[in-house]
Length: 90
Image 1 (cartoon, helix red, strand yellow):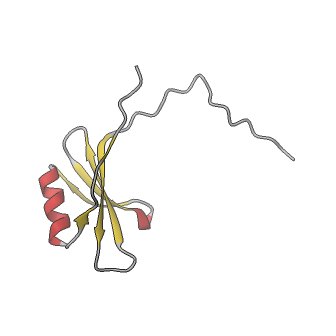
Image 2 (cartoon, rainbow, N blue to C red; image 1 turned 90 degrees about the horizontal axis):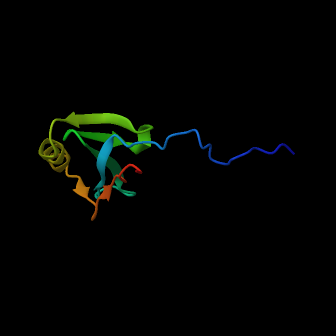
């Protein structure tokens, strides 16, 4: 049996997220509910991705308000809570 070394390399820099927060939005009228991901970027722009289609970008906006309005018009509802990006290590 071949073994693979899975130890972290000291030479690699940790990944720095280009997003600031993540929200999960659902269409509660479908079973199972249809899920979309709203990524808020540090620049203030927002992107909406479809995880069922390999995280395909389906909407982009200059502000959170525009992204929220787009989701609400299509009758999506946010799940409670928000995941914030971790700050980069010192």
